[in-house]
Image 1 (tube, one colour):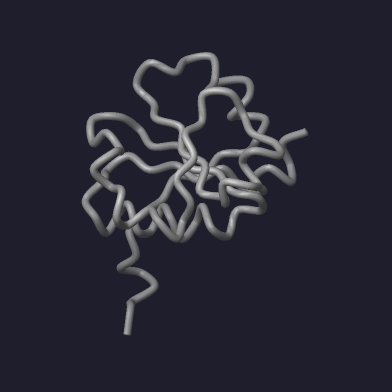
Image 2 (tube, rainbow, N blue to C red):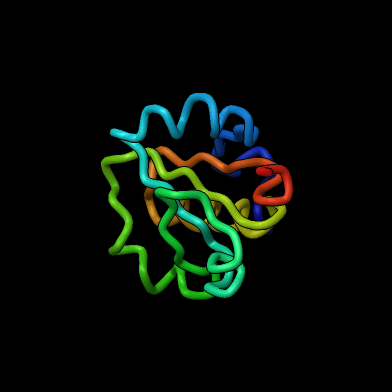
Length: 105
C-alpha cells in the first residue's frame, strides 16, 4: 500500500499563474497536455505538446529531464496522475495545473 506521507511532492499552480508567469517565461519549462488528441484539437494552449495520459508511459523519452514539466488536462485529474507517473519515472520538477482547461478560458 502506498504511504500518503511518502508520496512525492508535486507543485500545483492555478491557470492564472500559468497565464501570468509560466507562459511568459518558457525557457526552462516543457508544457505537456495529457488529454486525448480530440480534446487537444478542440481547444489547446499554444506551446503545449499533446501526449495523452494513456500513451504517456511509453513516450517518456520525448520529455526533457532538464526542464520543469508543466502538466494540464481537462479538470486536473489526469494531469495529477501524469505528474505522479513522471515523479515515479525520476522527473524532478513536475507542476500540475489545477482545474485544467475547465478553468483556462
